[in-house]
Image 1 (tube, one colour):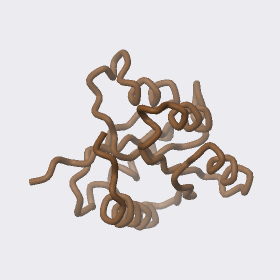
Image 2 (tube, helix red, strand yellow; image 1 turned 30 degrees about the vertical axis):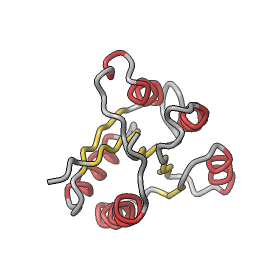
Image 3 (cartoon, helix red, strand yellow; image 1 turned 60 degrees about the vertical axis):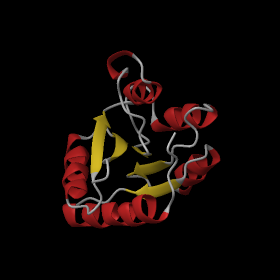
Length: 143
């Protein structure tokens, strides 16, 4: 049996965390969903600092833009400038569909930008699409 794929969800909305966790339970691919609630925790997790010193290196990051303490744009910029982290695909999941947010995310080297759905069925469909492409088709780095 294959080891689960470690995925980091950076999300401050408990409702969205719950919907995402439920959706990931339905997948064919074994995943380990790790959740942090703000940008500071996300960077600590990714850099394996403090309480996250033993955290696994995620194969994929699902990043909300509007976060407390450090927003998703700051997290994205820092991760993509770090030679040890930049190969991790970052999928921005935001309630915003504003063209400015989309363009800015890609300028900061996001690998994908998706608008968050509002109900469980749509979350399920989104997660299935993530699974098919990012966990099924794309080759993720083993570093």
